[in-house]
Image 1: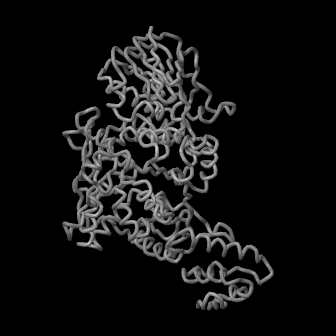
Image 2: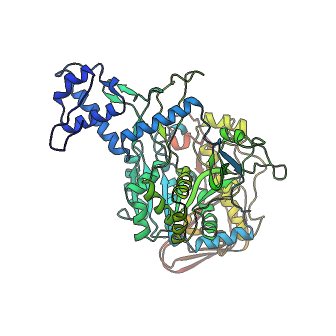
Image 3: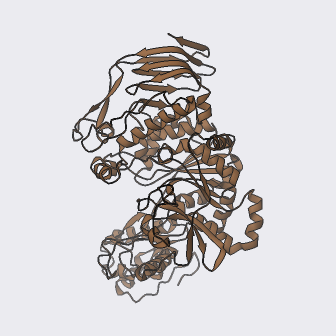
Length: 628
């Protein structure tokens, strides 16, 4: 029973151990006790000794409850109530998709370098001014065998440019004033702050343009009765709530609305911490979003039946054909949902349901509207690991989770609850609430780095490639080679090696010229194509680094290593029929267990040996021609 703020709170309980201790607590601590009792957690107090013994531990636990209540915006009681419903459904085996009929989602499949691809890239580029960026970076690199934060890893060891530097550079090339929010966690927050501080935010304004928001933790559940898990006698277990918290952080911080008013942000791009290739697919994805006025547009890739990747699926309510939900369905649930199972389309060799990359563009006008209604709370789920088929005990405590890609559930809920009003508000956003997808070749949209060498070798055995740092680096170089060939309209510009390189046994990767394109060199195929002329030939053993907006190449024959940097306002570097031949760079295999070698190299299985290079650098505000 709670009285007014100034009076003592009276706790009614049958728990004798708790009764004996009530006199040592202040009102805030009693509020925490009341929350625990409301959540049927009185078992926590059963073994509490009499006052004067372990009092600090008791108060520490209650302070933790108050912190957890504050961290979870709807409050810890609501968290418990959600858990009761979700764990009951899990125990009963309730099928969330039982009343939904699947069909192929709305969207486009874009062939790289096609007319449509260029059309949507151009449309996207014309809307860069309306972009805001959201990076989910709550993970350490432990699964990679790297003790630091993943965004501090280099995307390639030729440039040594870390993921975060690449992202910020790409963002500022698209729009120098575009805002970025980075969601961190307890594990990554301080290290992210330090990385940014050491590099002066990689050129970004840390006051308004760059914001770090930390994802907090939630209590665990130890059993089907929703008893909170205890880490120790006086400490509740805590786990991450899932990357869906990015939406509640954007809402509760007021950031999404601030971006809309202060930066005129019309579109939000949500992206992952180690998937740099997605930025090369962003212009076309944005263009499709603008033309179709999608409320959410997910970058997708072709997936084969049974592939362990979620699938974007359109679901229609069997009782109401107007009730439509387009959402990611996890691969292990897809086969049971589809009438014929998860099968390939014979005409394409792929499933009709494209793979989810977890990179997507959201209409910020519709987003602000929907987030206001639901306070940023993405619908949760629970995934307990049961000890056996009886489902009566857990292998380890579980928790409620939410996923950022499930935002369409709120769009769907909004349309159902507000009906005609939703239609009127659609008009005010300048678009509808339709969810779609844009499908790209995998090398252009999804090549994340997330597995260590041992796991990667197993992945190679099962699917021919992996999510290793070596394959991620090879993917970046392949993308850049393909981009140069497309931009120059010259398939002979550089070739792919017929043989894969295998520096670590069991981990072969694609090999060709190591092409590094800094974002400043261009963000679209046409941008880059305007800077390439004449006969350009790059041998497959070569390394080419292009860093600067003012670089133009009019004829180049390269067999070795060439680095061109062009900085400073109005500075231009024109390469005119230049031939460069030198020993170049090579990868050198290493002992991956050698602790004297930096982790960022050990997780790849190689280091870079720079034998010979030609470096061209200008920063003089003039046009500089370099010829043979």
